Structures are given as structure tokens and as C-alpha cells.
Length: 201
Image (cartoon, rainbow, N blue to C red):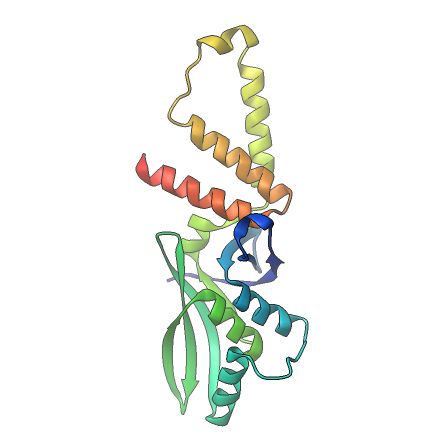
């Protein structure tokens, strides 16, 4: 399975996500971004480590790191390898006494662990192709809108009926706008809606 190495671009939130955050990953050798919706606790755990803020008592992920260090367990990498029904799955690849173990985890927990170990994070190319958002996508959407406006004369508009791709075009245009304004939680929602629409067609 082909892997794409990613890093954390940042965390964002909005009043519409009920306390959830969008964790934005970006590929190191490309121009795609991958938003993953995560809970507030995991977002805080990631943000504290990124900002090098040490809590007065260890969080769960800090506790894991302390236990791992005590028993000479090393985290080699994090691999986000599956996407089912808009849910991401990850593996924490560990090494202890020369033996490699893969432990199932939520991406949010896995990345909170990765930042504590300085472990690299990978995403499968299949997931990146399906759920990643290209930065230049907004430009393509803008060009599509301009081309559509130029191709249809105003007097012809009343005779046109929306085709099966009309809704998809609207969603993709909205996705481009969400990326342009860096509203990644809305981009993630639109991406999932586009995936549902494509799978039902």
C-alpha cells in the first residue's frame, strides 16, 4: 500500500461543529490537504504538545508516553490506512524488544501520540486521492463557473433543467470556496457530501 507522508498544518473550529475541531494534515511532497474532524479533548492534547505547553498533570497521551518510555517501547510511525463511511482508521506502529506491533487507533489519538514521540505520520494514497483536497481545486472551480456562465445566454436559462451533475457541480464549487476561505470543517462536510452523491449515482 502506497504511503504519503503528512504533517500537521493546524487545527480549526467553528460554531457549527458542536465543539469538534478539524485537524488539517498536508502532504509533504504535494499540494493536498486532508481535514479530519476530531473531538475537543484530542484537539487540546495535540495543541498543547505543538505549543510545548506542559499540563500540571499528565494527560492520557502523556501517560502512554511515560509508560512506553518505562518499558522501552518506541512508536515508529502512524499510518492512517482506512476510510469507511466517512470514518478514518489508523495504526500506531510500535517496536518493543525488536518486535513490530500494529495497534488500532483513532487518527486523533494516534496523532496525539505521534507528536509526543516525534513519529512520522503517513496516509494511504488511496485515502488521500479520495478525501484529500487539492489547493488548486478552487481555481479549477472558478474557471468552471466562468466557463458555464459564458456558455449559457440569459434568454436560454429558462429552458434548461438541472442535469444529474448540477448538484455535484454546486457542491464542488462550494468546496472550492471553503478551501479558499480556509474553512476546513465546512470543506470536510462538503467532501463527505460529494462522496455520498458520487456513490449513489
